Image 1 (cartoon, one colour):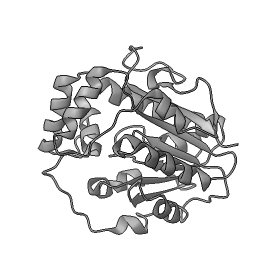
Image 2 (cartoon, rainbow, N blue to C red):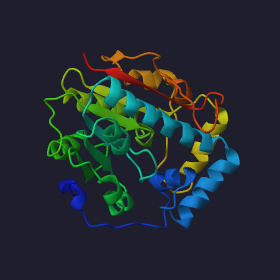
Image 3 (cartoon, one colour):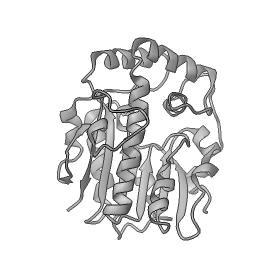
Amino acid sequence: MSGPGGAGRAVVDIDSTVPHSARIWNWLLGGKDNYPVDREAGGRVLQVFPGMVDIARHSRHMLTRAVRFLAQDAGIRQFLDIGTGLPTVNNTHEVAQGMAPTSRIVYVDNDPLVLVHAEALLTSTPEGATDYIQADVRDPALILREAAKTLDFSRPTALMLMGILGLVGDYDETRSIVRRLTAALPSGSYLALYDGTDTDPAYVTAMHGHAKSGAVPYIPRSPQAIAGYFEGLELLDPGVVPVTRWRPDPNPWGAPADVACWGGVARKP
C-alpha cells in the first residue's frame, strides 16, 4: 500500500454547502459519504428523472465488467482511473487485483472528500500497488507526472474515464484531454470510457436542473460525440453502446431498457 501521491497532499478543504457530483453519485449508489446538500440535489434530479438510479447502478456495473475484461482477458496490469469518485463497491483495484494481484492502480479525483476516504482506495495486495492523486481531469500533464511514480508508462496501461468528461463543458477540450492522455500510453494500452447521453429528454432536463443547484454542470452528449473519443483507437465489440449492452452479464437488477449512458472500450494500436 502506498500513500496519496504528491498532488494528493493538498490541504483538505471540504465545502459541504455546495453539492458535488462525486458525493451525489455516492448517494445514488447507496453510500453514506455525502452531505444533506448532496442528497437534496440528488433528490431533485430523481423527482424529474427517477431513472438516474438505473444509470448509476448500470454504469458502475459496466466499470466492473470492463476492468474484469482488461485484467483477465487483455492482460492489463496497470490502471489509471480518473474521476474515480468516492469508494463504494467493486472499486477498480478490488476487481483488477482480484483477477491479477500484481495490478497497479492510480486513482485521480478533485473532490477533497475523496482524499479523506482515500485509505479505502489504497488497500492493495502485497504484490500490487495503489495510489491516489488529487487533481483535475483538465490537467493531464500533472496527472501523468504524478501517476508515473506508481505506473510504468512504457508498459500497456488502461486509461479509465468513467462518467467524468461530462463535467468538462467544452467538447473540443474533452477531445484534447483524451488525446493527451492516450498519447502518453504505449501500444497495447486501452481506453475505457462512458458518459451520459442526450438520448433521453427527461435525463437532459434533469441535468439542466442539476446545474441550477450550484453543482458543476454535467453535459449530456450525443452517442456520436462519445464515439469521437475513441478516434484513432481500435474499438472493441460491441462498439459504443448503452452501458447495459456492453458485454452484459447477470446483475441484481435484471435487464432494463437502454439507459442514457453510453460507452465502450478500445485498444491503442
